[in-house]
Every structure is written in C-alpha cells, then in structure tokens.
Image (cartoon, rainbow, N blue to C red; front, side, top):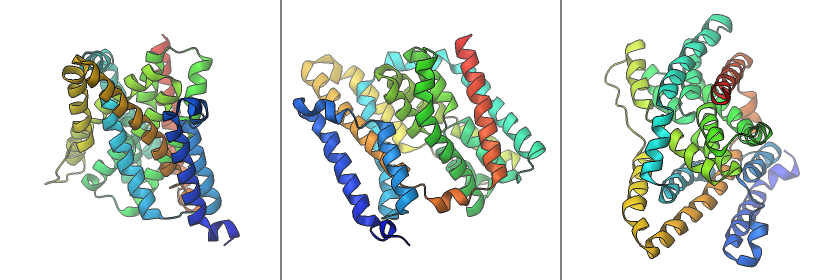
Length: 327
C-alpha cells in the first residue's frame, strides 16, 4: 500500500469539497467562468484518476451518493422540460427504439453465446444493459435470470467501463461530424448504456442535447418492464416482481408540474430554472462519485470475453444508430 492509498480518505474528501465549492461558485457572477470549467467529463475524470491511484475511500458513502444524487438530479432536470417537447422527442424515435432494443438483444446473443461462448446469464445481462439502460436493466433482469454475484459484477463492470469511455469520446465525435443537438441526443440516448453517461454526454454537448437525450433515455428505460417479463418466460422464472424505478415517475411528475404550473407565471419560471440549475450541478458531482467507484481490482475482475462482447456489441449499436441518424 503506497502513501496515496494510505491517505485515500483525506484526498477523497479534499477532492469532493473542492469540486463542490467550484460548482457552487457558479452562483457568483464573477466566478461563473471558473465554475464552468468543472464539466461532467472533468468530474468523472477526477473520480477515475482518484480511484485508479488511491483505490476506494468511503465505499459505502460513495456508492449511495452515486446512486441517489444521480436520481435526484434527473428528477430536478424535469423542471427544465416541457411535456409537448418530450412527447415529440419520444414519438419521433419510437419505431427505431423498438428495433434497436430487439436487435441489440439478438446481436448480443449471437456474439456472446455463438462466437465468444460467454456463459448464458452473463451474456444476457450484458446484452440487456446495452439494449436499454445499462446498470438499471442489469439490476432489474439479474434476479429474473437468477444470476449470481459474479455474473452480475462482470456485466455491471463491463457496462460501466464502456460508459466511462462513451462520456469522453461521444461529444468530440458529435462535434467532428457536425451533428445537431437533436441528432447527437438521439445517438447518445441509444448508443450509451447508463442514464448517467447519457445525461453527462448531453450536458457536455449542449442544453438542447441534454433535454432530448434525457427524455429519450428515460423513455427507453421503461422497456425494462417488457424485457423483464420476456426474460422471465425465457428463463422459466416465476413470481418475479417488476418495478418501475421510482425516480422515473418523479421525473415525469416534475415535467408536468413545470409545464402546467410553474411555466404560467414569472416566479414559477424562476423556481423551475433554479431547481434545474442545481440539478445540473448535482449531476456533475454525481459523476465524480461514479468515477471513484471504478478501482483497479474492479477492472481486473472482468474477464476478456465478456468485455469483448460488450465492446463489439457497443460498437455495432453505435455505428448502426449513427448511420440511421446521418442517412
């Protein structure tokens, strides 16, 4: 254990406090340019560097914060959205969403089981996480297929590593291809696994991309329900309860409140904007917690074949989605 690992807790707390202060400086007009430097990719990078050099510090606290702060942030983002725009965004890509979910599951099965011979449950979990919403889909489907802790961990780490990569490379690729805010948001929402990285990539690309990407991704997350039901039939599992993540319901409620209540008067608009602004700062901070969860030991625990399945499947889905958008 090196000196940095021995002092991981104070380093972790120092980083966390520093990032929090810098984000809050955004409320001070003269300090806004400094605060703007702390983008979602920067926060994630800080967490990743810390975890890989110092290991885990306060793992229980970090795990809870990465989970709940992200969910609260997504709900807060709802106060900056409009129902009509959300419905339009969701309906535009509905047919492609259906095709992409089914196609991803079939291609994932072909790559994982037929070519790489990954065990059935791990392969299915990786395909599920790629098809819908990363860790949330894996967490929902895992109990249905009766996956053990090892299979769950391998699938989650595979998806998480690719999420971290996507958050960094998608915005530059989007700019290089001169994608519009809407096109980038659609691409990111379908090709990036977890909601956290989709929202982070959208925020890095622009306000409109953030709004559309979040809406499409959370609409897509509802596919957890039919996927879990179909999975139960495929794996002959009975008496499994499927729950819609509560934060998705609150996100929808927030959009309705913002559209039909707050947007009708000036003070309400100010309140909605304030909540939305705070949610974006919390979202950025949540990515630090997520990055700080990925340790060297976690990376080493992932086998080559499951990771290879995840990478190949991800590349195929990313390219197919991008081709669909460009053509």
